[in-house]
Image 1 (spheres, helix red, strand yellow):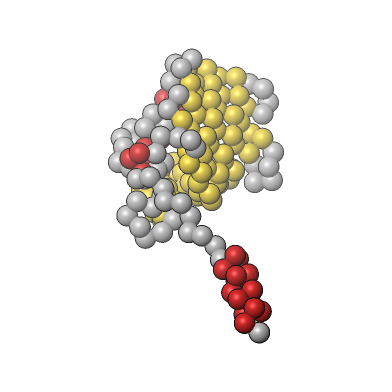
Image 2: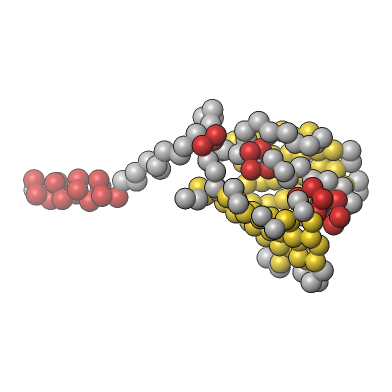
Length: 167
């Protein structure tokens, strides 16, 4: 009887989940990845996309897809500049994020400081109104779950489904 009780306790203890490892403070995170969803409204036009973003100080890779998973665009930023390849094989290239966005979309996007504001840290949103609407928890250093960017008649809502800290 005692053996069965001990065995039961050991099995239950073996199934217990450990708390997730502590994450460093937001200011210390240099490399990360996330996947989520984008909702973009410009006037009466609306777009919904899936997004996967990998960031480290030397390189960003962004993959955009339709809600059903069909690839729409790939954006890369590195020491050579910024490049955008669309599903129809059109290419755009520029020296930096802002110039690339203006060339491809006709307006600048607040991507230069994105590695900071994506994490919810203060950063210059380059003329856009930026608001962290929801965080993953109530903790003061919790990462954003929902970010809104707004300028003129453009509203971008970024829903982050899962974060990964990269080493």
